Length: 259
Ligand SMILES: CCCCC/C=C\C/C=C\CCC/C=C/C(=O)SCCNC(=O)CCNC(=O)[C@H](O)C(C)(C)COP(=O)(O)OP(=O)(O)OC[C@H]1O[C@@H](n2cnc3c(N)ncnc32)[C@H](O)[C@@H]1OP(=O)(O)O
Figure (cartoon, rainbow, N blue to C red):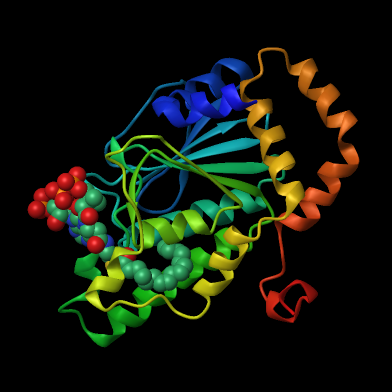
């Protein structure tokens, strides 16, 4: 398992899509266009520079690979947040989808955080709309019923880091040039109180979560699918417990865990 994770974080994340497609046989690529509708693409490897969120769905595993695709730095602009929200809604409603991996199609950058130009020289209505969109992504990702992993394949400052924190689990490429953290505090931008929830969860991961995520990653990479079936059977109880742990209620402050 350590070897699998090492592969993942040594810059091979983009290859994951290929792995998923080769494995599934009946794969499709789901793209969101600017009007919010999705287009199925029958081929693996297709890419369009105009699509801001690329979704590659592996029907065999029920895992969707989401790639942020707004060069140069995947900054979280209002249009990107809106498109991402639509994609998350669609996946949430897709009964075949069991999990998602959030990553980037832009080399060396996961996300540069909130789009700075959405936070300056705009009317107040824009700020309200923008902030609502930021909170919506948090609620959709953190509150999702799908298992979700952030595959951080590049730098991820500020809101990019927060975006990754919304996921159940994070794997970051081991590259000394990739940075992550809340650099925006230097500008006086302070994350709101609900950021505590994410921070707390990262520092106190439920023990079973590791097993659950390891199983998911293993499922994606293993060359013999039957091996995974055995693992799933052997650890079925742990997996059930994991799933119940993964999605802590958002109003978790009342949860015993916080007392
Ligand atoms: C959605 C979140 C949900 C979870 C929410 C949970 C809690 C949230 C609570 C609060 C959120 C508030 C806190 C967050 C605040 C922010 O995110 S503020 C944004 C702060 N971001 C930054 O400071 C990033 C600054 N950028 C960099 O450090 C670097 O650009 C880089 C990302 C490391 C990439 O470096 P490099 O490859 O060298 O590229 P360049 O620096 O040359 O940049 C290329 C062009 O991209 C423009 N750009 C960079 N960052 C942004 C940005 N954030 N917004 C808009 N544009 C950006 C940069 O200006 C360059 O443009 P030009 O080529 O010069 O035109």
